[in-house]
Length: 402
Image (cartoon, rainbow, N blue to C red):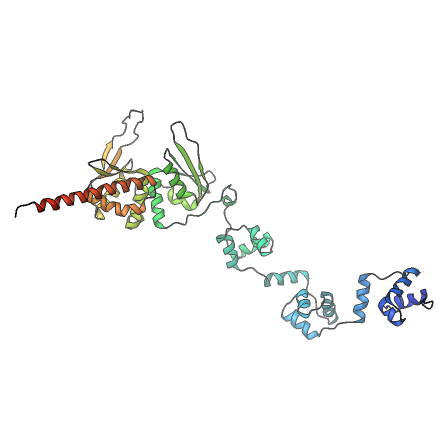
């Protein structure tokens, strides 16, 4: 039904002067909302922007928040405007308007940031765990905790947490700290004195450990000892069949630097540490030898003092043996042209009962697969020989005249 009474001046008065909405105008004029909308469009009456419409709506249907409630949340509890709005289920603009209306001073930006930092401060224990245990970088920690890298750096300085050395980052492969037992440390020292070359890298942040061998078992042992601490590089076989294998580790392996013809006092004080050292030295310089008549355990090297120290400590621990003897003098030329630069010494044990006792103690300490195979081979031959000798004794006693 046409509505000639709804004119352009009337619509302008209701919409712009009295600030009614189109819905309110339709109720007042007893017509449909679409009628008002079409009429305004036909008469070219512009509509309000959304921000203006919201402002008018807020003025009409004003929502008040008690001043005491705002003071408690904003001043005493130190809540932010978004937190108050969430707690009261109100829009943040309403909360801000009510704070201003009640003459409660708003925080400055710097005060708000400082308060946020105090409330959200990361604990020292959390930083220590993420940085030292999980090995995360400061950037990774910042990303994980929703902070900036500079914020994490500032907190670490505040807590007195030292940052990692540049060598930790300026390296292609990650290096891990030595975390072995004293027995493992003693074994590595023994193996190093026998077969490894250790030196400080030019940057003085890492060590280079290398070894040369033709044996696959030696490469496997090197991997077993150092693979979890750094990347192992293995060179191609040379003309003589030798291969070089290298690992770069961090400075927690400084105990391998000294190359002295001596056994450290802390190793000699504990029998378990001592036999671990002998196990490492045996894997490098020892052998287990047998034929149809004899069996022997042999340590042969240029380290005179180490061999004599092992000999004296064996006697002290109740393992009877002979003193080391000079095997090859300095300057001797072999058939292949090799000249001995120092006196070559040999420490040998061949007594059956001593060997059996020594093998029981030494077997758990060895890690070289070939040394273990040879030991078990010699041990089984010794046990058979001992059983045969005992059976012969028993039979000879039975045949004696009564």
